[in-house]
Amino acid sequence: MAVNLQAPNPADLKPVPGVQLGTARAGVRKANRRDVLVVTLAEGSQVAGVFTRNRFCAAPVQLCRQHLAIERGTAPGIRALLVNTGNANAGTGEDGLARARSTCVALAAHLGVKPDQVLPFSTGVIMETLPNDRIEAGLPAALADRDADHWAQAAEAIMTTDTLPKAASVQVQIGGKTVTVTGIGKGAGMIRPNMATMLGFIATDAVLAPQLLETLTRETADHSFNRITIDGDTSTNDSFVLIATQQAGHVPITQLASGDGAVLREAVEGVVGRLASQGF
Image (cartoon, rainbow, N blue to C red; front, side, top):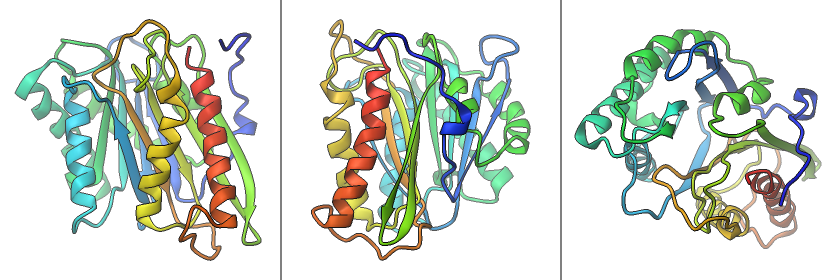
């Protein structure tokens, strides 16, 4: 069990070229706390995700799966993540889906992208109506707050019952270039194999093929979040996302079994492993 955890030092969380993060205090459930996070991604970024295996998926999980499936087809790619805490938008039916879509439409309008280029995530109390109007009203503040160095604030903005924000970062050399892997997570208590009540967002500027990103995401989750158990519960909102902005400038990685692929895998699994060990 992880003990004596300390809040991350913002100076230890390295910015990832192509990623900016901004937060807002939108009053989703409580006043005067960070509860909305916007992550914007440079054009050309690749995104992969794995989600809960619970049959009762929350509305944002359903939309994330749809939008990522579109990305694998002909869409121009995911350009933003939108996360709220305080309300899980789970067990809310068609109304919950409509409200989650509304937040995607609103953020897309601010950014000049398509709604299906936004991935929504929610965490918090289930079976309550998502106050999407408050989230959407908070978007200008979150967008104005964006900065590449705001990983620590982002970790705080996705907390629910966590006692401390969870974040980790590492830099490695690939092809003579410095490659960064930085991530944040949330989750406490309800953890069982298959990530229950976990959210994890990891970004790297490594250059790799999209199919490798999906493999790395799935295998990394299996080696970390999916190996933890506490009380046997699972969640409706579990989401683990890996982002590659493709900006490091090294020769593209085409095989995870290669020397450069192994270095990247070790770096990503190291960051995710640290987040997973903090999650209970």
